[in-house]
Length: 113
Length: 112
Image (cartoon, rainbow over all chains, first blue to last red; front, side):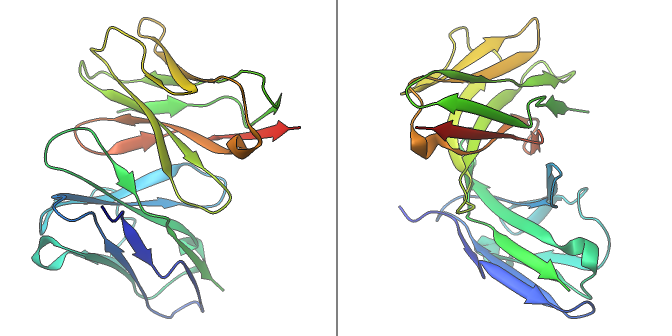
């Protein structure tokens, strides 16, 4: 089966611009998660979708971040406007409705200059 | 709240030797799961091994084993017969209700 796909793999944008990250989970996985790793720090949870609904968005840093999951399939994470501290690697993961298996994507490395 | 602590920022091991990466955790949940992931320089997060809090046997997956000591709240990863390709960042993580809490990671370097 295809894994979790994220794109772009890298993005360099200027402060104040908008960037949209995309995640395609494993087909049939109800759960979709976004995580972020800022340089030198732990990987932090951002939010969790169950199908198209936001189950938990307690990790979203502020209202410059907007996540959507249209139709319960792929998800986008938009940062608008981007700030320097948003730089890091953004990971997406998916898991089935039952079971513990998480599968991560390769991540998107975002650099805000 | 859940917390994962990895006290080793970096570890060095020679090829073919065994290495233990430390992980301690803190949680008030009775049911939880512990994961280890490998992140090579290419960036992807590769699942290595899982241990459920109620599992009586230590988990094993090929050269990876998890030394689970519940009373000490530790879940150390043991890699036997290290290979050059094992050089990577290793993350310990805990699953709560649904999300994962990660440690800061340990960078493992395997030398010939």
